[in-house]
Image (cartoon, rainbow, N blue to C red; front, side, top):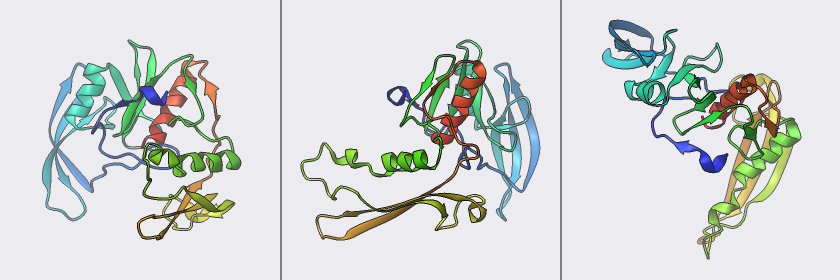
Length: 242
């Protein structure tokens, strides 16, 4: 699946979060000046935005028929008009649409600002794919190793600028050392610490990575047998590329 992911540029404003995209453009106050509806299934609102003490400014944003934020008008045109996708929220607690159904293709799509991909019955998720969800703590740590110990970045270089990554610590049931994740103070996760040596000056470059345990755990490698499965794959993909 990874080789077929389509890069899309600026598709949505901002997406990140716990298990699914959820960081949204949420102004303190919005005043709608006008609304233009499109047959493709979205509307563009011209709004006066008040945000974080800034001087109010005018902005055009696209929404689905339920009033959920899609992105700018170009985002909505590409998704709804060009692709025939009906954007919806991946989770009722989110504010930005990151998945949608395409009736013509009979596919559920997931996306972020980085990529977009469609899933249907028969679609597969394999280890290393963006939509891969670990099945437990050990699987999570192995996924982190695959992502962060990326020696393949330098495999085509005769003289890589750094040494191969060395694992100096791996730990289960670890609290977030930086306390940067949502509810991380009460959640546990997997911890991975690595180091490389920069060859030009011998400096040791250390890095610490922490990922929270999923609630619930994912399915690992699996095949979509129903359209409900395809929707789940699209949701996991949107989370993985956020």
